[in-house]
Length: 120
Image (cartoon, rainbow, N blue to C red; front, side, top):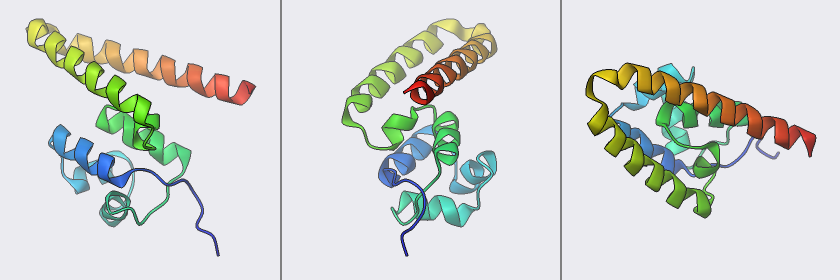
């Protein structure tokens, strides 16, 4: 019997989670998953729905494509992370406003990509 869902790069999920400084339990809680599921994902023993991949990406601050292991997205992700880190170091007190703006922008980009995918 074939397993349902999509394979993702569990090592990347673990790497991003550790870089974010959160535990498997915290990630599981934020993504409405069981901690064991997060462990299985990170160990490459679980497949996920697109919805779960999106939740993981959102919580880990990366793209769904990067989680799926697309090499071209890795460079973009690392460059974006550097730019965000630099910007955050300059923002100081405006951090909350900045993160809200980034979340809004991310939501709009995600909706746009989803709309494009449906149109194809």
